[in-house]
Length: 235
Image (cartoon, rainbow, N blue to C red; front, side, top):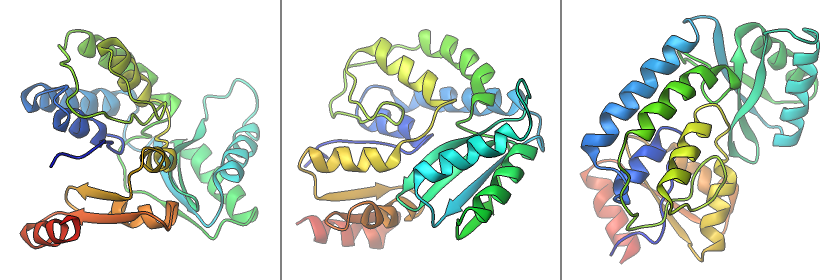
C-alpha cells in the first residue's frame, strides 16, 4: 500500500512532494538545481559555515547562538542560528563562519559534548539564504502544483498544506528557516504512525527516529537488500 504520510528533510521535502504527486520529477529537478545555484551565489564559498552540536538540547543551543552573536555587537553582519533540529541531542547551527566558530566555542564551554564543523558549501537554512529564497520564490510562483495524493508534513511549520500557494510559501521560507525534524517525526506519531521508512542513499534519518521517540521504528531503504528487509518488516 501507499504511505499514510510523507516528509522530507531539507532538500528531501522536494522528493516528498514528488512522491505525493504535488510536483513531477521533471518539475522538481530544475527547481532544486536552481535552488542550489541561488544558495551558492548568495554567500561566497568559505564565508559561511555549519556545525553539528551534539549532546545539548535545542533550547540551550539557541541560547548559545544568541550569546555568540551578541559578542559581535548590534548591527553586525555576523549571523549564527539553529538550522536543523535533528534529534533531541543534535542541532545543526548555520551562519557566517566567524559567528559559527564563536558559537562552537561558546556551546562547548556551556556543556555541549561536541561541535563538529560540517563539510558544506553554504550556510543553509540561515537568514543569509534570504536573497536566494527571494529568487526561488519567483521560480515557485511559475510552477504548477497538483493536488497531493498523500499528505506531506512540511519542515518549516510542521504542517500539512493542501493549497498550492501555501506549499510555495513554505518552500520559500524553508530555504532560510530551520528544519524542524524532531517535530515532523512527532507529527507522524500524532497521526498514529509507528513505522517510518527512509528512502534514499543512507540511513541517517532512520537512526534519528529512535532517538526522537523510542516507541517508533525507523527503517532505511537504500538498495535491493534493504527493500526486501523493509517489505518483510511491513508485511
